[in-house]
Structure formats: C-alpha cells, structure tokens
Length: 335
Ligand SMILES: *Cc1c(COP(=O)(O)O)cnc(C)c1O
Image 1 (cartoon, rainbow, N blue to C red):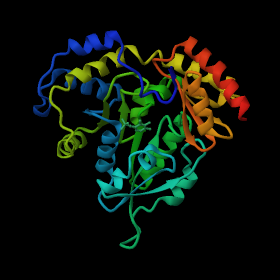
Image 2 (image 1 turned 90 degrees about the horizontal axis):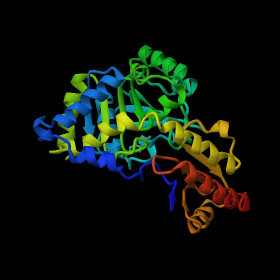
Image 3 (image 1 turned 180 degrees about the horizontal axis):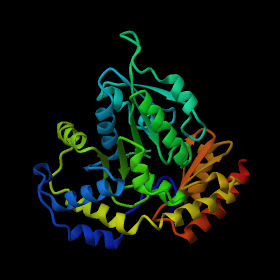
C-alpha cells in the first residue's frame, strides 16, 4: 500500500530506532533526562528563542501555547480552517476557557484586512478582548500553503500596535523553511510562541515542541504536568527527534517534488503545490478514496468533493510515480 493519507503515518527508520535504543535517559519530570534536554536546547536555539518544551503531541503544545498568550475569557483570532479551530476537538474552549473568531482564506493565508477588522483590543467590559492571533505555517487544510514572510512581518507590526501575542502553529514549519529558504531563526523572530512537530514530515514516531521565552516555558511545564503530560524517560523518544533534525530536514525537497508530480497527474496546477500536500477537487471524494484503495493507494477525503494527498518519508519517488498513475485514472473517471 502507498499511504498518502498523512505524513503522520511514517515509521521510524532503522537508524532512527538505533538512535532511540542508544539514548541516554533520566526522569524528565525531575528535569533529568539528558536527551530531552538536548532536544529542547537544540530546538530553542534553532529558532533563536530562550527555551523549549517537549510534548507528546502538537495538540498539547498548541494548548500550552494558546494558554500562555490568551487569558481565560478572552479570545484568539485564527483562520477558519486552522488546526486549533477544527482538529483539536474544542480543547481551547474546553480546557483553556478561551473563545475564537476566525477570518477565511481559501488557502489559509494571513489576511491583514480581515484580521484588523476582527481585532477588539480592549473595548470596555462589554466585548471579548482579543489577546492573540494564531497563524498556521504551512497551512494544513489550506493545502500545505506557505505564509509569505512579508505577511508574517506585517502581522507582527499589527500585533505590536494592538498589543496582541502571536502564536505560530508550525507543525510543518520545516516544510515552509525548505520550500522558501527562509531560516528557522527568521520564522522564530515572527512569533512570541511557536509549536513544531517531529512526527509529521520529519518522521519521528511522536513528539512536538513548544518554543518561547523561558518564563513561558517554565509555566507551560507546570501546566503540562497538571494535564497529565509529564513523562519520565522520554529521552527514548527525544532521540528520534534529534535524529530527525539531523537527517530528515533537507530531504523534504523530495516530498515537495513528489507532491508536484501527483498534482500534475490529478490535473492540479503544480504551481499551486507549495509543499507536501495536494488538494484535489473531484465529484465524489469518498468513492475515489475507495477505488484508489482497491488499487493500492490510500488517500483521504477531507470534504465531500475534496481529496487530500500527503507525501512523506515513506513514499519514494517510484511510489509517487505509481500512485500518480493510479490517481490520474481515478480522478479522470470522476472529474
Ligand atoms: C498535526 C498538526 C498539529 C498537531 O497534531 P497532533 O496530532 O496533536 O500531534 C497541529 N497543527 C497542525 C497544523 C497540524 O497539522
């Protein structure tokens, strides 16, 4: 089976497993796991921030990120298809006690005009106060869209003028950096707190990080424990992340090339494919998924007329060519 459902399906490579088996570990709740500390220090340094916190999921990292910027009873602005709005099962309301209002862009991009219209800085005791803006880069449901650096800079100016925090949901920020040549440090400059995933394109079995100022990370560490997310010899998993950072970033160009190949086969303009996600319109997505599955290609329906294909570490160039051949037939039969 060629699995294009998500870049979360990758399995740790032999060398990654060897790094995990060899990891030096300790009790991370006591702050004594040397491999976890090395990972946190390395990632903080990559983004030019003072500290980072290793978490089991990106959803937990996002929960802690929004908590650090948005007081109970105030709001965060995000795009309508954002992961924090659609795919975290209401956690920011249920656990953080905050509300959201959204702007809409077909590709999930920053729209400064819409954002400025939504901002309610402090309009008195009658209206919810906006405390932060959250931006996803790349944007998952938008189709792997990269946020242009100029838009991020302009958003930062707007946030400064209204005293808003900025959260960058960078589950796939590595893909954005590789696609544009923008450095991680430059992205680090554009946000107060950043979340990144090791378990998507980088191919680690699990793990994300929250990155930010040291005081924020100290408070987030306490909340992580309160929420049941303190872990002990987590260095076994952190070692996979360190291995992925060293060996699996540069190769993301291959995933992007494979995604363009799939796009072309499905009649999508490859110029619209910026990273490793291809969104394919078709008449009956559920039927297309089932026919493709019978032919050995797994993909997902993310809407009644929308297929999503995601390339990753476990999809080789020849897998991509074979999947392209299958999908071009499936999609042309259901245009
Ligand atoms: C996958 C993802 C996350 C985190 O997801 P987990 O499954 O909780 O690790 C956060 N944001 C975006 C944009 C994602 O794609």
